[in-house]
Every structure is written in C-alpha cells, then in structure tokens.
Image (cartoon, rainbow, N blue to C red; front, top):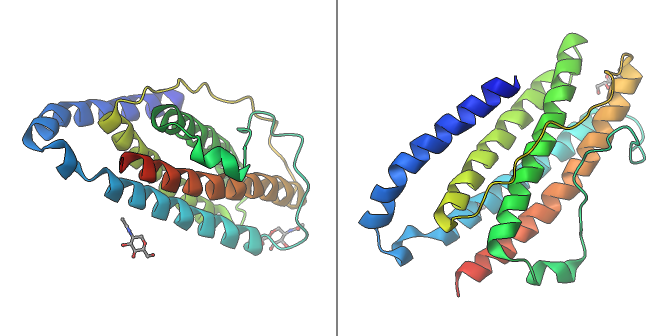
Length: 198
Ligand SMILES: *[C@@H]1O[C@H](CO)[C@@H](O)[C@H](O)[C@H]1NC(C)=O
Ligand SMILES: *[C@@H]1O[C@H](CO)[C@@H](O)[C@H](O)[C@H]1NC(C)=O
C-alpha cells in the first residue's frame, strides 16, 4: 500500500514537474492566479469539513472524548492570533504532511469498516477520495511557491477494533479531530491567500 501510494504520488510529482517549466515561462507571475488556488483549497477543505460533520451525525450516539488510541494525529494549534503570523512555505508543507497523516489514519479505518461491512464504509471512501484530491491540489500549490515536502512516515496505528461499538467510537474520535483540523486548515488557507496578495 505504501509502495503504491509513493509511486503514484511520485508519478504525479513528475508529471507536474514536467509541466512546470512550460507553465512558469509561458505565464507572467501575476497571471498564475495563486489566489484562485487558495480559494479552491479553502472550498475543498470546507467541503471536507461538511462531509466529516455528516459522517459524525450518521454514526449515531454520543460524541466521544479524544481517543487515547490515536497517538500520531497532528497536534492542532487553534489560537486565532497564530493565523496572522503563518508563513507561506512552512505552513503549506506542514498542512500537506498533516493531511497525509490523516489520510493514513482514514485508510486504516477504511480497512476496518470494509472488513466489517460497516454502513459508514461508502461515505468514508468518498471522504478519502476528497482528501486525496485536496492533497493533489496542495502539492500543486507547493510546487508553485517552491515549498519543500516533509517526509511523512506511516503512523503507528492501534490494533483493529472489532465490535461495531468500538468501530463507531474510534471513527467518531478520528472524525472529530479531523473536523477541528479542517476548520483550522481552511482558516490557514485564507490567511495564506492574503499573504500572496502582497
Ligand atoms: C468556492 O465556493 C463559493 C461558494 O460556495 C463559490 O462562490 C466560489 O466560486 C468557489 N471558489 C472556487 C475557487 O472554487
Ligand atoms: C454504529 O453506527 C451505525 C451507523 O450509524 C449505527 O447504525 C449503529 O447502531 C451503531 N452501533 C453502535 C453499537 O453504536
């Protein structure tokens, strides 16, 4: 799985890299419309947040506390005044790495829900493909501004939950964290957009 992901993303990267010289030389800098890309990133992130919200509602029952089993989820800093001090390149690199880490977790959850024919499996599959398209968009933006990639090693994940109840609990724990993260990421993209206007 890891091999597959890596080779497809490096394929994507080489396709993008191949287009880059053409792209940059054909267009003056101001015509590259980085703002439009940031709008798209913000929109897609808000859309993911909505999908996450719906999936949490679908998994009936009480909200859960932060699950101690997910130790390798990104820490989220949601202090509002942090947003204005964000720097373009490191923030893009970090958001990219964080989305990848969440994606690893959702792949893990996807395996569990498929194995147990859990009713959330199709919605989860849809979410994962949206996460991947957002990651693709983010990679394009990173190439444009020459932001480095942070290597993401696969997180250490807990053993698969086995009962429906456990699956619901860990799904909700993961989704709640992701919803918070998306909220922060969408605001970060907006803040970065204003920096590219300078
Ligand atoms: C983002 O969504 C808003 C409304 O939901 C829409 O007006 C806008 O055109 C979208 N922007 C992009 C770049 O997709
Ligand atoms: C788990 O979630 C599914 C999907 O919403 C729901 O139908 C089921 O009743 C839940 N099971 C438990 C044990 O909470």
